[in-house]
Figure 1 (cartoon, one colour):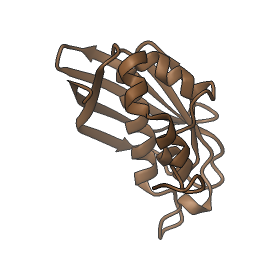
Figure 2 (figure 1 turned 120 degrees about the vertical axis):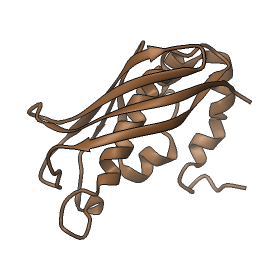
Figure 3 (figure 1 turned 180 degrees about the vertical axis):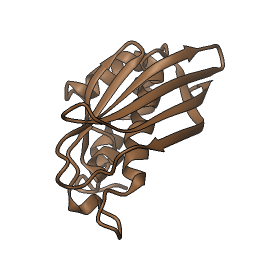
Figure 4 (figure 1 turned 30 degrees about the horizontal axis):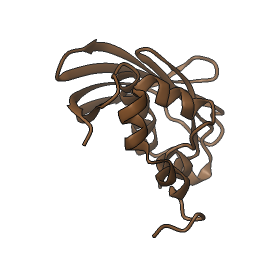
Length: 163
C-alpha cells in the first residue's frame, strides 16, 4: 500500500485510468491543468507542470535546475525527450473520447540548443498532426522564454481501448 507521502500516491488515489474511461482525454487533461487532479508522478519527479490543454494541443512548462544536469554540465537529453514526449502524447490524448487510451510506438527528438540551469522556464508544445482510428501522430517544439528552439520531435501512437 502506498503511503500518502510517497511520490505518486496522490495520483494513484484518483484512479487516473478510471477517470479517463468516464471523462475523455481533454476534460481529464484540463482537470490536471486546473489543479483538480494532481500532476502525475513523473511531473513531480522532474518538476514540470501542465500549462495548457486544448483539442489537439498541450503545453508542458518547466524551469530546469542543477538536478537536471548531466556529466558535462547541461540538462540531460532525457529531460528534453520527456517534456516533448509528454506534450505530444497529451496533444493526442486531448482528442480521445472516454474509454480510449494510447501507447507510444516511437518518437524522434532532434536537439538544437543546450539547456542549463540558467536557461529559465522552457515550454514543450505538442500539436496533433493526424488522428486515425488506430494510429495518431503529433509533433512537438521545446522553446526557451525568448522563443528560441531548443529541440523538436515527432511521435506515433497506437490508439487502444482502456482496460
